[in-house]
Length: 549
Image (cartoon, rainbow, N blue to C red; front, side, top):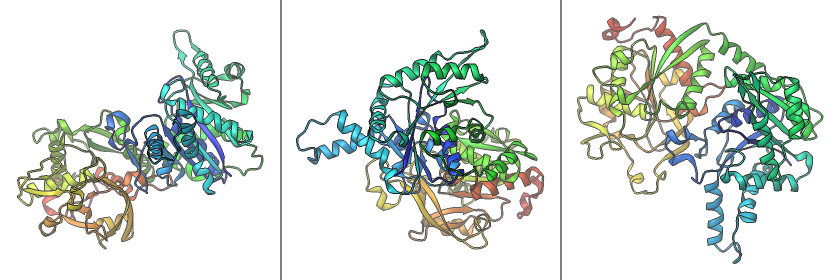
């Protein structure tokens, strides 16, 4: 049987429960344990798939096609192992399951209540991964903040699990904030005391307190927290703000979070942690040899979490290339044909990001045109690839009214369209291609050079596809389909061989990038941007020669 670690949060949201959970998991993994992490979110949406990115950041997609919370991206990036549908559970999914069972008569006429029926379903899902026999330790992050009404059923489920399982099978870690009042030059522990009090009133008592702070706590503050929160002084962990999330595991190692957790779980024999690869990555990240500037063209750039996986993939690829990647956010809604050169001036590469809806589309198309005509390294993801297709159709093929039926259902030239079998599905999300799909790559193509093989698998989250009715026209005029789905023939990768570096993909490579396994497309894109920056791109098209640095 697995052992269970629960991570709760207090005082305020966005303290970094996901990073602390992932960091602890990384440390335990580095000591030879098999670890997984799951996230329980208190909102009533069944999953984040229908949420606006402004509401909840990006929607992360797993191998099996689950639309999940963005924290699962942190879990995968830290552990280099995949999560699944079972790793993210919402209040909506819990209630949906219980109500469906009630409608089917499973409760034999009983009154269905929050306790025990909802809490029983929560407990079942909390313990599910641990019963599969694959994991030694299961870490569960409870979303929201202690004291929130919507989190109470989850906290109650944790209380019951603490009561039902042996003491050394369950540990509760409470993440809280120790604010620093600059006027008084003091760290204040009272918010933490109140947070622990609220948690204790539900019947759940934390075994370990992780204190987020801007200033060092010192032994006196730690002892004060321990005294008033009823934990041992060594179980008060200082979590100082770090320059990068990837330094947090080493900070937690110094604070012995993993050792204290193992002691609480009755684990007395364990090897030393093996973090050599992690430390090597951090050295490259902290001491780059050069810098590149990448333009991120998107429509949700006001909220960094909307493109979280892309930004983290740039960090991984930058370290691999030993360069610092400076990302410049450019809102596509404010790009026009007249100002595009000014907006994109000084960039070493251009990434056109995913998205949905018509807002900002023409700006993205203008940005793609600029990159294509000026030999600027270009990388399009999902909608970004579709914009590259539309731009090429309009300005190279001469199909001036080319568009996607997502934005213009009556376009006479639907170069991007929905497959016929998808059009019959009406439920939101039902028309999506979600999760991992295979792709066959043409030998000798740029994509083949990037991946080093002809068969790959990448994750998808989209509804509209390249319209294969136009494929011959594109290929005869210089844009090739270098990757296709072997079963359906759908185009997955497009590129322009005559361009120094121009590639677009229908899938989301950022979802599989991790510290130890950076996404190849990002690694090569940053390498191309670095070469462009250094003026060493081999220009294949003589017409572009005069426009290169």
